[in-house]
Length: 452
Image 1 (tube, rainbow, N blue to C red):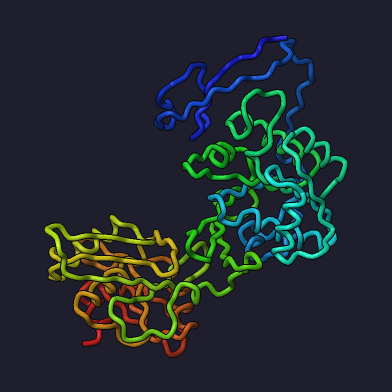
Image 2 (cartoon, rainbow, N blue to C red):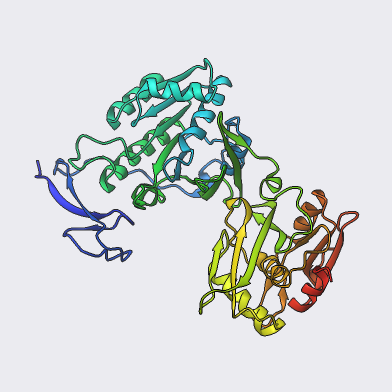
């Protein structure tokens, strides 16, 4: 028998080193190397026979058999449902709603006639039952287990023989053979590998919950991303009720889909019309407010952009953003001053995306510019207006993808004017009653949008 060995693993990227390093050689982070003691192992050579390789055309094509979770937004992100034998990682900040989402999914799958096992390493079965009662989950045939030993968890899974397993969370379970504490890189990797072998051999889909700690350490989800089949991130601001489920990796579907939920007292509620969630209602003739048709995944969504421009009280003007990129707003302010002639050098500028949503695509540039101009000139937008387009450094309005889908979404919610990039990119067919104003540069966009 070989003696235990000590190694060091980076909690940020999983890099392994035989000695301690102040800075990780792979990701460059400081003070992330954690000591791990490897368990004893048999040093005798393996005598297993190697599996024979076979040509790919000799392997039969098997259609994916999925089953629904009963939550349409979750099924959308998964690619249509849960694939048997898949390993899914759900990550997110503490308290964002990961356990709530999976508890609701587990109850609905149980009601459909499938056997589900919910394993909690952080709560007792009584605490899980109390949380289920708060979510108004009645008497459902859902199996609960409170255990932190991964070997005992595997034994229980084989005894119950469920059709879906939820492990909450992967940082709370441990393998007794390893002397490192639960949540360490080695423990997380070994426990996830054991669950992966079980999922693949038994054909049982397994959901793993991965926490992002309050200190910002991402060891759990980031180390496991290359091991699992699907990686989902649950995002959202703690002070806002909406949540976005985003797929960043999916071997069985597209990563271009998102699911939108709203947190309520009874749990998470699906949002089928997200455009109404990110716009203020009943407000008209207000300066500094523009609606942009944005694309999240493959879904069009209207988001209200608000801007406030006021004289600065200090020598250096302040620039503050919420929900949009700070550097992008600084670029737009520079273009407005240089190409349009707005004197914004002595003005404070504040830009906000309503509802706490985060907008990263360049297509929101035109809406930001119009909102800043409207606030600076104290002139509101013309009627029910939406705007979309990317702004170049020369002031030109560049085309954006899926323009027709954006315009149709704006028309569906009652908007009558849409300012878009001009030229050959204009869609041939638009909704009835929608006036599409194609503009070539920022000056034309301002003239078309503002009410003089």
